[in-house]
Amino acid sequence: MTIRGGDTSRLRRINLVTTLRTVRSQGPIGLTDLARGAALSRPTVEGLVEELLAAGWLRELPPESGQMGRPARLFAFHATGGHVLGIDIGSYTLRVSVADLDGAVVAAHDEQISATAGRAERLAGLRTAIAAALDAGGLTADRIAAVCAGTTGVVTAEGVVKLSVGLPEWTGLDLAGELRAGFDCPVLVENDCNLAALAERWRGQARSVDDLVFVLSGVRTGAGILVGGKLLKGARGGAGEIGALPLVGWHRAPVHLTGFQGLPPGTAPRDAAAQVFAAARSDDPAAQWAVEQYARDLAEGIAALVLTVDPELVVLGGGVSRSGDVLLAPLRRHLDPFCLEPPVVAISDLGEQAVVLGAVRRALDHVDARLYDFDAPLPKPFS
Image 1 (cartoon, rainbow, N blue to C red):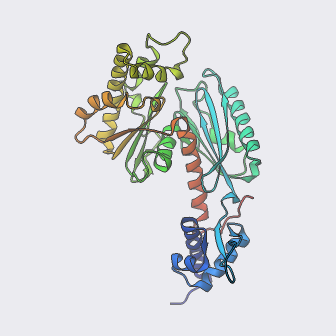
Image 2: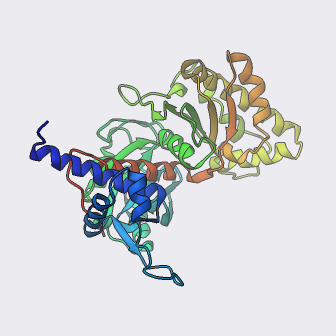
Image 3: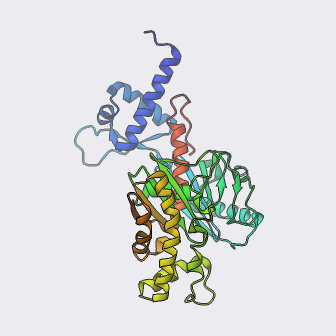
């Protein structure tokens, strides 16, 4: 078979990707081990490494001290060759995290906002939070390889918030367009529950779990679903919005916590869950009854999702992540009878960072897809 010029170029791109993947998974690594791991000849790998060094995607480490003879060359992925921005647009808090291309968070900023803030005020607060996070990381917007923002509501593939009942004046907002005004890089927008599910699989309770339901519950309740390790978003972005169905109890579940009579005067809705769970843990009968009713209503929607997608694991996050074990027992009592085969249920340990970490992960996935695209030129780093 005759190999045409285009074929040889694509083969070299494939070999570049193979070499880069091997370094990222096994590095720091020397040429001999790299050739073995990439299943390529050493001369081929040496040439590919030089190209990746010149492009800025690899860096050569200084030789180890104390070695006899000529020290072996060691190479690592240049994780700071670019950064990504993860954003969580909440009712009360705007969170922004900056991470390098290995996913290490290098800077973050939280900006408090009123739950009643309109579109203009929330967007202004978001710009402030972004600028503060970039400044904390010593970065400028042109150093960002991808941005991902998580928001409540139904989001289109183009990054428009088609429906949001949780944030004032948010329905119809072209959020991706608003963010693109400040960045010359890809900007992604996802439902916050979907991003929390990605984070849980990346760094939480669901590592290595492919079929997952993540329930994000606090002032409101929603769900993100992974099937076969991929987000299930549906044809119009509405997958997992089981709370929109009045027949299940998600619309009334938070009231059992926010309306608990034992709350200290002036307790904000976002703080109610922690207060009620703490009281229940201290054997307060009224608080335990409130948790029981909350678990019953929560179980109705979870059961509907379990019977639909048959997940291996259900993870509860958001405000309920402060519950510890006080919620699990009553939830299982109400959930298990509805399920043909009850799934494992766990409480997230990511706390308030779930959505912003998921946004970081989604942005990293986008960068990796470009970096590993056989049919596109090797992109330039952003340093």
